[in-house]
Length: 86
Image 1: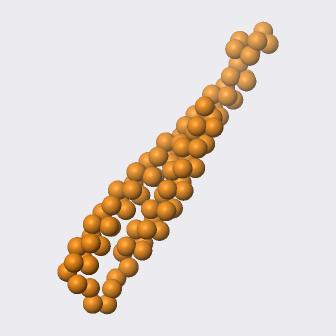
Image 2: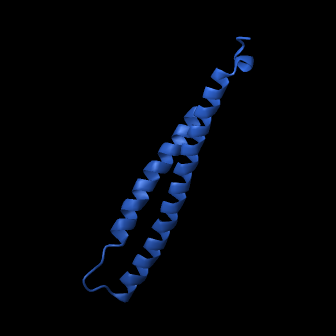
Image 3: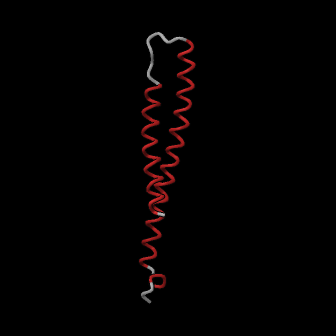
């Protein structure tokens, strides 16, 4: 279960960086763009924006999952009833 949360976080983080770089590349201006190029770039920017926001959400879910997992482990180790030391 912990491995899954780590993989979700890392996948989201790597995807976030990739989407950010592609969004930055798509947003670079051209000196004399044609109307077709402007339309294509607008579509690309919209696609990479959605990908970026989705990736941030996946990375955040993985991160909060890791925090929750650590807190539940710490809570279980401090609880003498559940640890079997009673």
